[in-house]
Amino acid sequence: MPFNSFDNYPMSWKPALKNLTAPIYATIAEMLEKDIKDGLLPPGTKLPPQRELADYLDVNLSTISKAFKICEQKGLIGATVGRGTYVSSDVGVNKILLPNHGLSNVIELGSIFPENTLNNEIAAYMKKMVVEPNFGDLFRYGHPEGTMWQKVAAVKLIEKASFKTDPQEILLASGGQNAITAILAGLFKPGDKIGTDPVTYPGIKTAANMLGIQLVAIQQKNNEVTEEGLIYACKNENIKGLYLIPDFHNPTTHTMSIDTRKMVAYLAQKEDLIVIEDAIHSLLHENPLAPIASYAPERVLYICSLSKVISPGLRLAFVVAPEVFKKKLSAALYNINISVSPMMAELAAGIINEGVSDTILEKRRAYSREQNLIVSQYLGDYKVNGAPECIFRWLVLPDDTTGKAFELRAYHAGVQVYASERFCSGYSKTPERRKNGYYCSRKQR
Image 1 (cartoon, rainbow, N blue to C red):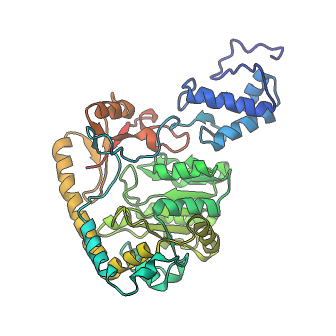
Image 2: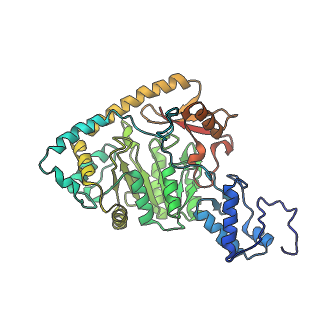
Protein backbone atom coordinates (compact mmCIF):
# COMPACT_ATOMS: atom_id res chain seq x y z
CA MET A 1 0.00 0.00 0.00
CA PRO A 2 1.42 3.44 -0.88
CA PHE A 3 2.05 6.08 1.78
CA ASN A 4 -1.15 7.94 0.87
CA SER A 5 -4.17 5.97 2.12
CA PHE A 6 -7.06 5.29 -0.26
CA ASP A 7 -9.26 3.61 2.37
CA ASN A 8 -11.96 6.26 2.15
CA TYR A 9 -11.48 7.10 -1.53
CA PRO A 10 -14.64 6.57 -3.65
CA MET A 11 -13.42 3.79 -5.96
CA SER A 12 -15.78 1.21 -7.45
CA TRP A 13 -13.14 -1.55 -7.22
CA LYS A 14 -10.51 -1.97 -4.50
CA PRO A 15 -8.82 -5.33 -5.00
CA ALA A 16 -6.56 -6.63 -2.26
CA LEU A 17 -3.25 -7.88 -3.64
CA LYS A 18 -2.38 -10.77 -1.33
CA ASN A 19 -0.31 -13.85 -2.06
CA LEU A 20 0.71 -12.45 -5.42
CA THR A 21 2.10 -14.69 -8.09
CA ALA A 22 4.05 -13.34 -11.04
CA PRO A 23 3.24 -11.72 -13.33
CA ILE A 24 1.25 -9.20 -11.31
CA TYR A 25 -0.83 -8.00 -14.28
CA ALA A 26 -2.17 -11.55 -14.81
CA THR A 27 -3.18 -11.77 -11.13
CA ILE A 28 -5.01 -8.45 -11.32
CA ALA A 29 -6.77 -9.60 -14.50
CA GLU A 30 -7.86 -12.83 -12.80
CA MET A 31 -9.18 -10.91 -9.79
CA LEU A 32 -11.10 -8.50 -12.00
CA GLU A 33 -12.60 -11.35 -14.02
CA LYS A 34 -13.63 -13.18 -10.84
CA ASP A 35 -15.25 -10.12 -9.26
CA ILE A 36 -17.17 -9.44 -12.47
CA LYS A 37 -18.39 -13.03 -12.82
CA ASP A 38 -19.24 -13.23 -9.11
CA GLY A 39 -21.46 -10.16 -9.46
CA LEU A 40 -19.39 -7.89 -7.25
CA LEU A 41 -19.00 -5.59 -10.26
CA PRO A 42 -22.40 -5.54 -12.01
CA PRO A 43 -22.81 -4.81 -15.74
CA GLY A 44 -22.34 -1.13 -16.51
CA THR A 45 -20.10 -0.46 -13.51
CA LYS A 46 -17.52 2.23 -14.22
CA LEU A 47 -14.08 1.03 -13.14
CA PRO A 48 -11.51 3.33 -11.50
CA PRO A 49 -9.21 5.19 -13.88
CA GLN A 50 -6.11 3.10 -14.62
CA ARG A 51 -3.68 5.62 -13.13
CA GLU A 52 -5.78 5.91 -9.98
CA LEU A 53 -5.94 2.12 -9.60
CA ALA A 54 -2.19 1.86 -10.17
CA ASP A 55 -1.60 4.37 -7.36
CA TYR A 56 -3.96 2.47 -5.08
CA LEU A 57 -2.22 -0.86 -5.69
CA ASP A 58 1.25 0.71 -5.81
CA VAL A 59 2.06 -0.82 -9.20
CA ASN A 60 3.12 0.59 -12.54
CA LEU A 61 0.47 2.02 -14.83
CA SER A 62 1.53 -0.47 -17.52
CA THR A 63 0.63 -3.32 -15.16
CA ILE A 64 -2.95 -2.10 -14.91
CA SER A 65 -3.11 -1.46 -18.66
CA LYS A 66 -2.05 -5.05 -19.38
CA ALA A 67 -4.59 -6.44 -16.91
CA PHE A 68 -7.41 -4.37 -18.38
CA LYS A 69 -6.38 -5.39 -21.90
CA ILE A 70 -6.74 -9.08 -21.02
CA CYS A 71 -10.26 -8.55 -19.67
CA GLU A 72 -11.14 -6.31 -22.60
CA GLN A 73 -10.18 -9.02 -25.09
CA LYS A 74 -12.38 -11.46 -23.19
CA GLY A 75 -15.34 -9.11 -23.60
CA LEU A 76 -15.62 -8.46 -19.87
CA ILE A 77 -14.92 -4.72 -20.00
CA GLY A 78 -14.68 -1.96 -22.55
CA ALA A 79 -13.12 1.49 -22.66
CA THR A 80 -13.92 4.69 -24.53
CA VAL A 81 -11.54 7.61 -24.84
CA GLY A 82 -12.69 10.35 -22.51
CA ARG A 83 -15.44 8.25 -20.91
CA GLY A 84 -13.62 5.59 -18.94
CA THR A 85 -13.79 1.82 -18.61
CA TYR A 86 -17.01 -0.07 -17.91
CA VAL A 87 -18.05 -3.63 -17.15
CA SER A 88 -19.76 -5.04 -20.25
CA SER A 89 -23.55 -4.98 -20.24
CA ASP A 90 -23.92 -8.62 -21.27
CA VAL A 91 -21.57 -10.19 -18.72
CA GLY A 92 -23.10 -13.40 -17.36
CA VAL A 93 -25.76 -13.49 -20.06
CA ASN A 94 -26.12 -16.51 -22.32
CA LYS A 95 -25.52 -15.22 -25.85
CA ILE A 96 -26.26 -18.51 -27.63
CA LEU A 97 -29.98 -18.18 -28.36
CA LEU A 98 -30.98 -21.70 -29.28
CA PRO A 99 -34.15 -23.36 -27.97
CA ASN A 100 -34.06 -26.15 -25.39
CA HIS A 101 -36.13 -28.84 -27.07
CA GLY A 102 -36.10 -30.89 -23.88
CA LEU A 103 -38.46 -28.45 -22.14
CA SER A 104 -41.89 -29.60 -23.27
CA ASN A 105 -43.61 -27.29 -20.78
CA VAL A 106 -42.10 -24.11 -22.28
CA ILE A 107 -43.47 -22.35 -25.38
CA GLU A 108 -40.48 -21.16 -27.45
CA LEU A 109 -40.98 -17.55 -28.54
CA GLY A 110 -37.37 -16.40 -28.24
CA SER A 111 -35.28 -18.03 -30.93
CA ILE A 112 -36.06 -17.01 -34.51
CA PHE A 113 -36.96 -20.07 -36.54
CA PRO A 114 -38.96 -19.83 -39.76
CA GLU A 115 -42.15 -21.83 -40.17
CA ASN A 116 -41.39 -25.48 -41.00
CA THR A 117 -44.05 -26.57 -43.51
CA LEU A 118 -42.38 -24.66 -46.36
CA ASN A 119 -39.52 -27.13 -46.18
CA ASN A 120 -41.81 -29.48 -48.11
CA GLU A 121 -41.20 -27.30 -51.17
CA ILE A 122 -37.47 -27.96 -50.83
CA ALA A 123 -37.97 -31.67 -50.16
CA ALA A 124 -40.04 -31.99 -53.34
CA TYR A 125 -37.27 -30.45 -55.42
CA MET A 126 -34.66 -32.62 -53.73
CA LYS A 127 -36.57 -35.77 -54.72
CA LYS A 128 -36.04 -34.76 -58.33
CA MET A 129 -32.33 -34.29 -57.69
CA VAL A 130 -31.94 -37.77 -56.19
CA VAL A 131 -32.93 -39.55 -59.41
CA GLU A 132 -30.41 -37.61 -61.51
CA PRO A 133 -27.62 -39.88 -62.88
CA ASN A 134 -24.82 -37.76 -61.39
CA PHE A 135 -26.42 -37.23 -57.96
CA GLY A 136 -23.63 -39.24 -56.31
CA ASP A 137 -21.08 -36.66 -57.45
CA LEU A 138 -22.54 -34.23 -54.92
CA PHE A 139 -21.00 -36.22 -52.08
CA ARG A 140 -17.47 -35.38 -53.19
CA TYR A 141 -15.43 -32.38 -52.18
CA GLY A 142 -16.53 -29.28 -54.04
CA HIS A 143 -14.55 -26.27 -55.15
CA PRO A 144 -14.21 -23.87 -52.21
CA GLU A 145 -15.68 -21.04 -54.29
CA GLY A 146 -18.52 -23.07 -55.81
CA THR A 147 -19.38 -23.48 -59.48
CA MET A 148 -20.28 -20.77 -61.96
CA TRP A 149 -23.84 -22.12 -62.16
CA GLN A 150 -24.20 -21.74 -58.40
CA LYS A 151 -22.77 -18.22 -58.49
CA VAL A 152 -25.13 -17.16 -61.27
CA ALA A 153 -28.02 -18.43 -59.13
CA ALA A 154 -26.69 -16.39 -56.21
CA VAL A 155 -26.61 -13.25 -58.35
CA LYS A 156 -30.20 -13.93 -59.42
CA LEU A 157 -31.34 -14.19 -55.81
CA ILE A 158 -29.39 -11.15 -54.61
CA GLU A 159 -30.87 -9.01 -57.40
CA LYS A 160 -34.25 -9.50 -55.70
CA ALA A 161 -32.76 -7.58 -52.77
CA SER A 162 -32.09 -4.57 -55.06
CA PHE A 163 -28.39 -5.34 -55.45
CA LYS A 164 -26.80 -6.13 -58.80
CA THR A 165 -23.46 -7.88 -58.61
CA ASP A 166 -21.15 -10.11 -60.63
CA PRO A 167 -20.76 -13.91 -60.29
CA GLN A 168 -17.01 -13.47 -59.97
CA GLU A 169 -17.53 -11.60 -56.69
CA ILE A 170 -19.51 -14.43 -55.06
CA LEU A 171 -18.07 -16.69 -52.35
CA LEU A 172 -19.99 -19.50 -50.66
CA ALA A 173 -20.16 -20.02 -46.89
CA SER A 174 -21.90 -22.57 -44.69
CA GLY A 175 -24.49 -20.10 -43.44
CA GLY A 176 -24.49 -16.51 -42.28
CA GLN A 177 -22.74 -17.17 -38.96
CA ASN A 178 -20.01 -19.06 -40.81
CA ALA A 179 -19.57 -16.10 -43.17
CA ILE A 180 -19.35 -13.61 -40.28
CA THR A 181 -16.76 -15.71 -38.46
CA ALA A 182 -14.67 -16.16 -41.62
CA ILE A 183 -14.73 -12.41 -42.31
CA LEU A 184 -13.59 -11.62 -38.77
CA ALA A 185 -10.87 -14.29 -38.88
CA GLY A 186 -9.66 -13.44 -42.36
CA LEU A 187 -9.80 -9.66 -42.45
CA PHE A 188 -9.28 -8.60 -38.83
CA LYS A 189 -6.81 -9.47 -36.09
CA PRO A 190 -7.02 -9.83 -32.31
CA GLY A 191 -7.30 -6.43 -30.66
CA ASP A 192 -9.09 -4.80 -33.59
CA LYS A 193 -12.30 -2.89 -32.91
CA ILE A 194 -15.51 -3.11 -34.95
CA GLY A 195 -18.46 -0.77 -34.61
CA THR A 196 -21.98 -2.13 -34.12
CA ASP A 197 -25.42 -1.01 -33.07
CA PRO A 198 -25.82 -0.72 -29.26
CA VAL A 199 -28.03 -3.82 -29.38
CA THR A 200 -27.12 -6.33 -32.04
CA TYR A 201 -27.19 -9.93 -33.25
CA PRO A 202 -25.56 -12.14 -30.58
CA GLY A 203 -23.70 -14.18 -33.22
CA ILE A 204 -21.36 -11.28 -34.01
CA LYS A 205 -20.68 -10.97 -30.28
CA THR A 206 -19.75 -14.63 -29.74
CA ALA A 207 -17.58 -14.73 -32.88
CA ALA A 208 -15.79 -11.47 -32.02
CA ASN A 209 -15.18 -12.61 -28.45
CA MET A 210 -13.73 -15.93 -29.65
CA LEU A 211 -11.31 -14.11 -31.96
CA GLY A 212 -10.30 -11.36 -29.51
CA ILE A 213 -12.05 -8.61 -31.46
CA GLN A 214 -13.77 -5.83 -29.51
CA LEU A 215 -17.19 -4.49 -30.45
CA VAL A 216 -17.82 -0.78 -30.01
CA ALA A 217 -21.37 0.54 -29.77
CA ILE A 218 -21.93 3.46 -32.16
CA GLN A 219 -24.10 6.37 -31.07
CA GLN A 220 -27.64 6.13 -32.42
CA LYS A 221 -30.58 8.37 -33.15
CA ASN A 222 -33.97 6.95 -34.07
CA ASN A 223 -32.50 3.41 -34.08
CA GLU A 224 -29.83 4.28 -36.66
CA VAL A 225 -26.11 4.95 -36.32
CA THR A 226 -25.34 8.65 -36.60
CA GLU A 227 -22.69 10.35 -38.68
CA GLU A 228 -21.31 12.03 -35.57
CA GLY A 229 -21.16 8.73 -33.69
CA LEU A 230 -19.42 6.95 -36.53
CA ILE A 231 -16.86 9.72 -36.99
CA TYR A 232 -16.21 9.72 -33.24
CA ALA A 233 -15.63 5.96 -33.24
CA CYS A 234 -13.23 6.24 -36.18
CA LYS A 235 -11.19 9.03 -34.60
CA ASN A 236 -11.26 8.01 -30.93
CA GLU A 237 -11.79 4.24 -30.97
CA ASN A 238 -9.84 3.57 -34.18
CA ILE A 239 -12.45 1.09 -35.38
CA LYS A 240 -11.41 -0.98 -38.38
CA GLY A 241 -14.85 -2.11 -39.47
CA LEU A 242 -18.59 -1.92 -39.00
CA TYR A 243 -21.25 -4.64 -38.64
CA LEU A 244 -24.83 -3.70 -39.53
CA ILE A 245 -28.18 -5.37 -40.30
CA PRO A 246 -29.98 -2.70 -42.36
CA ASP A 247 -33.22 -4.63 -42.99
CA PHE A 248 -35.40 -5.93 -40.13
CA HIS A 249 -32.54 -5.42 -37.72
CA ASN A 250 -32.08 -8.17 -35.16
CA PRO A 251 -33.41 -7.57 -32.54
CA THR A 252 -35.13 -4.16 -32.94
CA THR A 253 -36.86 -4.95 -36.31
CA HIS A 254 -35.81 -1.51 -37.62
CA THR A 255 -35.13 -0.92 -41.32
CA MET A 256 -32.38 1.62 -42.01
CA SER A 257 -33.18 4.69 -44.11
CA ILE A 258 -31.60 5.35 -47.49
CA ASP A 259 -29.90 8.48 -46.14
CA THR A 260 -28.16 6.51 -43.40
CA ARG A 261 -27.09 3.81 -45.86
CA LYS A 262 -25.51 6.45 -48.07
CA MET A 263 -23.84 8.11 -45.06
CA VAL A 264 -22.33 4.79 -43.91
CA ALA A 265 -21.10 4.09 -47.45
CA TYR A 266 -19.51 7.54 -47.70
CA LEU A 267 -17.68 7.24 -44.37
CA ALA A 268 -16.61 3.68 -45.13
CA GLN A 269 -14.85 4.99 -48.22
CA LYS A 270 -13.43 8.03 -46.46
CA GLU A 271 -12.18 6.16 -43.37
CA ASP A 272 -11.23 2.87 -45.10
CA LEU A 273 -13.70 0.88 -43.00
CA ILE A 274 -14.62 -2.71 -43.79
CA VAL A 275 -18.40 -2.89 -43.62
CA ILE A 276 -20.06 -6.24 -42.93
CA GLU A 277 -23.61 -5.89 -44.25
CA ASP A 278 -25.73 -8.73 -42.91
CA ALA A 279 -28.69 -8.96 -45.30
CA ILE A 280 -30.17 -12.00 -43.59
CA HIS A 281 -33.72 -10.57 -43.59
CA SER A 282 -33.59 -8.29 -46.63
CA LEU A 283 -35.51 -10.60 -48.95
CA LEU A 284 -38.47 -10.63 -46.57
CA HIS A 285 -39.19 -7.10 -47.81
CA GLU A 286 -41.39 -7.16 -50.91
CA ASN A 287 -39.58 -4.05 -52.17
CA PRO A 288 -36.17 -3.97 -50.46
CA LEU A 289 -34.19 -0.75 -50.30
CA ALA A 290 -30.83 -0.63 -52.04
CA PRO A 291 -28.18 -2.01 -49.68
CA ILE A 292 -25.15 -0.15 -48.34
CA ALA A 293 -23.04 -2.28 -50.69
CA SER A 294 -24.64 -0.65 -53.72
CA TYR A 295 -23.21 2.73 -52.64
CA ALA A 296 -19.72 1.52 -51.68
CA PRO A 297 -19.19 -1.89 -53.32
CA GLU A 298 -15.43 -1.75 -52.83
CA ARG A 299 -15.71 -1.44 -49.01
CA VAL A 300 -18.68 -3.69 -48.17
CA LEU A 301 -18.91 -7.44 -47.67
CA TYR A 302 -22.54 -8.31 -48.36
CA ILE A 303 -23.93 -11.51 -46.79
CA CYS A 304 -27.07 -13.09 -48.22
CA SER A 305 -27.98 -16.01 -45.96
CA LEU A 306 -30.75 -18.51 -46.78
CA SER A 307 -31.54 -19.57 -43.21
CA LYS A 308 -34.34 -17.10 -42.43
CA VAL A 309 -35.72 -16.40 -45.91
CA ILE A 310 -35.65 -19.94 -47.34
CA SER A 311 -34.81 -22.59 -44.73
CA PRO A 312 -32.47 -22.92 -41.72
CA GLY A 313 -31.59 -26.41 -42.92
CA LEU A 314 -29.96 -24.94 -46.01
CA ARG A 315 -26.66 -24.09 -44.32
CA LEU A 316 -25.59 -21.74 -47.06
CA ALA A 317 -24.82 -18.08 -47.51
CA PHE A 318 -23.61 -16.09 -50.49
CA VAL A 319 -20.99 -13.43 -49.78
CA VAL A 320 -20.38 -10.61 -52.25
CA ALA A 321 -16.68 -9.91 -51.70
CA PRO A 322 -14.86 -6.93 -53.22
CA GLU A 323 -11.70 -7.94 -55.07
CA VAL A 324 -9.45 -6.32 -52.45
CA PHE A 325 -10.83 -8.67 -49.75
CA LYS A 326 -11.69 -11.74 -51.78
CA LYS A 327 -8.38 -13.62 -51.57
CA LYS A 328 -8.08 -13.34 -47.79
CA LEU A 329 -11.74 -14.20 -47.23
CA SER A 330 -11.53 -17.15 -49.61
CA ALA A 331 -8.54 -18.46 -47.63
CA ALA A 332 -10.42 -18.03 -44.34
CA LEU A 333 -13.45 -19.91 -45.68
CA TYR A 334 -11.16 -22.68 -46.94
CA ASN A 335 -9.43 -23.01 -43.58
CA ILE A 336 -12.77 -23.20 -41.78
CA ASN A 337 -14.77 -25.30 -44.26
CA ILE A 338 -12.42 -26.74 -46.92
CA SER A 339 -15.51 -26.47 -49.13
CA VAL A 340 -19.21 -25.85 -48.75
CA SER A 341 -21.34 -28.99 -49.15
CA PRO A 342 -21.74 -29.48 -52.94
CA MET A 343 -25.18 -30.97 -52.35
CA MET A 344 -26.39 -27.94 -50.38
CA ALA A 345 -24.92 -25.53 -52.93
CA GLU A 346 -26.51 -27.41 -55.83
CA LEU A 347 -29.85 -27.69 -54.04
CA ALA A 348 -29.88 -23.94 -53.33
CA ALA A 349 -28.94 -23.09 -56.92
CA GLY A 350 -31.67 -25.41 -58.20
CA ILE A 351 -34.51 -23.97 -56.14
CA ILE A 352 -33.43 -20.44 -57.10
CA ASN A 353 -33.25 -21.16 -60.84
CA GLU A 354 -36.49 -23.13 -60.83
CA GLY A 355 -38.41 -20.38 -58.98
CA VAL A 356 -39.02 -22.52 -55.88
CA SER A 357 -37.31 -19.88 -53.73
CA ASP A 358 -39.74 -17.24 -55.03
CA THR A 359 -42.69 -19.39 -53.98
CA ILE A 360 -41.20 -19.97 -50.54
CA LEU A 361 -40.48 -16.27 -50.04
CA GLU A 362 -44.01 -15.23 -50.91
CA LYS A 363 -45.54 -17.89 -48.67
CA ARG A 364 -43.21 -16.90 -45.85
CA ARG A 365 -44.27 -13.26 -46.13
CA ALA A 366 -47.94 -14.27 -46.17
CA TYR A 367 -47.47 -16.49 -43.12
CA SER A 368 -45.72 -13.67 -41.22
CA ARG A 369 -48.58 -11.29 -42.00
CA GLU A 370 -51.07 -13.79 -40.61
CA GLN A 371 -49.04 -14.38 -37.46
CA ASN A 372 -48.49 -10.67 -36.89
CA LEU A 373 -52.23 -10.11 -36.95
CA ILE A 374 -52.42 -12.52 -34.00
CA VAL A 375 -49.64 -10.60 -32.23
CA SER A 376 -51.59 -7.37 -32.72
CA GLN A 377 -54.73 -9.04 -31.40
CA TYR A 378 -53.12 -10.11 -28.13
CA LEU A 379 -50.65 -7.26 -27.64
CA GLY A 380 -52.59 -4.43 -29.22
CA ASP A 381 -52.43 -2.36 -26.02
CA TYR A 382 -48.62 -2.36 -26.08
CA LYS A 383 -45.97 -0.99 -28.38
CA VAL A 384 -44.70 -3.88 -30.47
CA ASN A 385 -42.23 -2.95 -33.21
CA GLY A 386 -41.98 -4.87 -36.46
CA ALA A 387 -43.35 -4.72 -40.02
CA PRO A 388 -46.03 -7.22 -41.10
CA GLU A 389 -43.46 -9.30 -43.03
CA CYS A 390 -40.91 -9.39 -40.19
CA ILE A 391 -40.58 -12.85 -38.60
CA PHE A 392 -39.89 -11.50 -35.07
CA ARG A 393 -41.08 -8.66 -32.85
CA TRP A 394 -39.61 -6.18 -30.38
CA LEU A 395 -41.87 -5.51 -27.41
CA VAL A 396 -41.41 -2.19 -25.59
CA LEU A 397 -42.19 -2.67 -21.91
CA PRO A 398 -43.72 -0.18 -19.46
CA ASP A 399 -41.31 2.06 -17.58
CA ASP A 400 -41.68 0.12 -14.33
CA THR A 401 -40.76 -3.24 -15.87
CA THR A 402 -37.27 -4.43 -16.72
CA GLY A 403 -36.59 -6.82 -19.55
CA LYS A 404 -34.66 -9.20 -17.30
CA ALA A 405 -37.57 -9.41 -14.87
CA PHE A 406 -40.07 -9.82 -17.72
CA GLU A 407 -38.05 -12.63 -19.30
CA LEU A 408 -37.93 -14.47 -15.96
CA ARG A 409 -41.63 -14.02 -15.26
CA ALA A 410 -42.53 -15.15 -18.77
CA TYR A 411 -40.36 -18.24 -18.38
CA HIS A 412 -42.00 -19.17 -15.10
CA ALA A 413 -45.34 -18.80 -16.89
CA GLY A 414 -44.14 -21.25 -19.55
CA VAL A 415 -43.04 -18.83 -22.30
CA GLN A 416 -39.46 -18.20 -23.45
CA VAL A 417 -38.65 -14.66 -24.64
CA TYR A 418 -35.34 -12.78 -24.65
CA ALA A 419 -34.53 -9.49 -22.92
CA SER A 420 -32.25 -6.83 -24.33
CA GLU A 421 -29.21 -7.67 -22.17
CA ARG A 422 -28.61 -10.62 -24.47
CA PHE A 423 -28.19 -8.23 -27.41
CA CYS A 424 -26.18 -5.40 -25.85
CA SER A 425 -22.97 -4.62 -27.69
CA GLY A 426 -19.85 -4.34 -25.57
CA TYR A 427 -20.41 -1.96 -22.67
CA SER A 428 -23.33 -0.09 -24.19
CA LYS A 429 -26.17 0.70 -21.85
CA THR A 430 -29.28 -1.44 -21.98
CA PRO A 431 -32.39 0.47 -23.09
CA GLU A 432 -33.66 0.90 -19.52
CA ARG A 433 -30.49 2.78 -18.54
CA ARG A 434 -30.60 5.21 -21.44
CA LYS A 435 -32.13 8.64 -20.97
CA ASN A 436 -35.85 8.49 -21.75
CA GLY A 437 -35.40 4.91 -22.93
CA TYR A 438 -37.28 1.69 -22.47
CA TYR A 439 -36.20 -1.78 -21.64
CA CYS A 440 -37.20 -4.12 -24.43
CA SER A 441 -37.82 -7.77 -24.94
CA ARG A 442 -37.99 -9.64 -28.20
CA LYS A 443 -40.83 -11.93 -29.25
CA GLN A 444 -41.33 -14.27 -32.14
CA ARG A 445 -44.75 -15.51 -33.09
